[in-house]
Length: 202
Image (cartoon, rainbow, N blue to C red; front, side):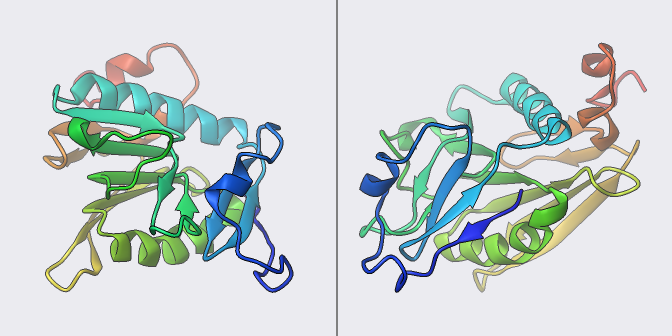
């Protein structure tokens, strides 16, 4: 997604999540990075397709003590000047808070658009690691074969890639709970995706 940045000095004072509540409900995604506004347009259809199918797949696999959330905002600091909205989140059910989350999720997921490659692979990688999100998945449907990369925090608080799965191969992980995903079926048209997305019917 294309991101429009406004520097904090252009805004005179850093913005907080209170300012976000006064912005229009126009389908765009409004986030904050150190008090400056990042605005992303509504996602393209392939992005929405991958996001919604993964949401369903994770929701089916999640145990009762976990929650899978779509489009939930997170306050990264007590000043509420750093606010992100990952495409998908998995949290401990006890960590749910309103109106925004304040504790690190177990997992954050971003679906890459052509204009968000640097942000998803670099900017958010550093932000999410610093905040202490244990796992970060990056789904890239813009490649010749759909890619799903899994990053995990190491002992130094930095992400390391533990696997990247392409196309028709099966992605399998035990964190934050056991789940299998065939990346191609996150975006492949047709009604049979439920049969094949977990690899069992392929």
